[in-house]
Every structure is written in structure tokens, then in C-alpha cells.
Length: 131
Image 1 (tube, helix red, strand yellow):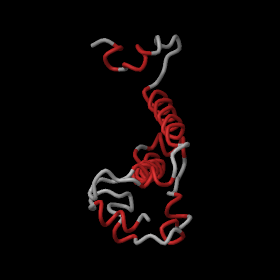
Image 2: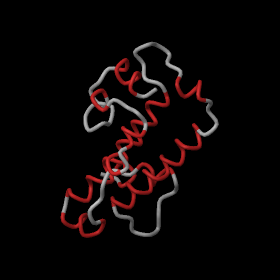
Image 3: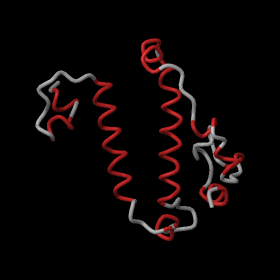
Image 4: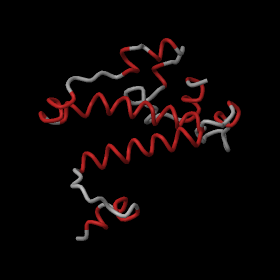
């Protein structure tokens, strides 16, 4: 299998001359995606962020919150997945939990889904929690 098939990002950017680990590629792509998302939504109004094409379709704002929650969840979970990751990154905690953001933002944690990430709940329940 060609490296260009496994890592199409390398092909699209002309490849790299320095050996790159899979973790470095994941980190770079994650960071680049994060920066692109922020630049795309930076100029949206509150009305645009909360607009829903249908009553059961989540808004752009919900999707941004959902992405941020999973990023927070994963940054805390990944170090515990392997001893080498734990040694490299140490113990991490979710900002959502340590800063008690659900309470600060007056959100009903019962309707925020799996690990307060928005997974597994209807748009109606989440909409009422994320206003």
C-alpha cells in the first residue's frame, strides 16, 4: 500500500522530507482543523450560530460546543490509554469538569448526553439545555 493512500494529507502538501510519526500527523491535522473551524465561524453572528434549518437539526453553535466537548474529553482520556502516553502527557483532567462549566453556564447536565458531550440525546432536549 502506498504511503500516499495511507496519508493523503502528505500527498496533498507535497509530502515531508522528515520522518513523521502517526501521532505527529494526528496532532498536526487536529490542530489545523481546529484553526480552520475557528476562522470559519469567527465572523458568524449569534443568530447564525443558533439558527436551525429544522426544529430537530442542531445548530452550528451546538456542533461547535460538541466538538469542543469531545476535544476536552479526549485530551483527558488519551494519556490513560497507554503507559507511554501517560508518561509523555501525565494525568489530564477535563476543563468541563474541573471548572464546573455546566453549572456556571446553567446547563441541565441530565440532558447533555454521554459524559456531557451531547451524544445520544435529541436536538430538542439539547437545544433547551444549550440556550
